[in-house]
Image (tube, rainbow, N blue to C red; front, top):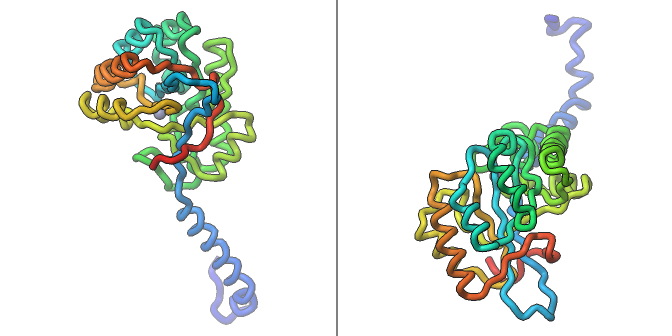
Length: 259
Ligand SMILES: [Zn+2]
């Protein structure tokens, strides 16, 4: 409709005092959404005072793509427990790998990494590490429940830990996921930076592991240095007497005394 500048349909003069504050308010909400900074969750294990040994949790993300059999076989050969965060996408693409993990259910817990590896950040146009976030909380719910359903269908066991793609979350996403009944899995040692580090750097990072740490690395990039680097670094930890537990073996708490 074409509004006549001075005709009866011209309501600008009447509406302006009402509309302007509303528009300003809406634009400030939009600006606030853009200003939200995602949080990278840093957690460590809560070990009982009676624990005198060196205990760490290894977590491995299976985001999309393939399967690092070198790393998986090293874990099996050395009886290393791990908590694996798998997406629905990865489960569908890697049935043989899934069968291998299930065959060693005593070593591996399979937990929820979402349906399609979409980061838990909310708002159009926002992204983290190049991955686009969620449009809204409805999509977040689909991502979390879709991942959980895929794991339940594939393993018969409902997951109760969640780690979002990239490990970064908006504060409102954290509350939402926890309200869905999931515990969020942070980490304290980033061993492979998304399977981008070379073997030497991965070993150097694992050399800094201390009792109570939660290590993150990746199980889905067989062409990367992760498998070789983790095998060498984990062997060093084994040689020092470290014991590896699944996340469920201990409570977790926000990381203390480490940047
Ligand atoms: Zn991932």
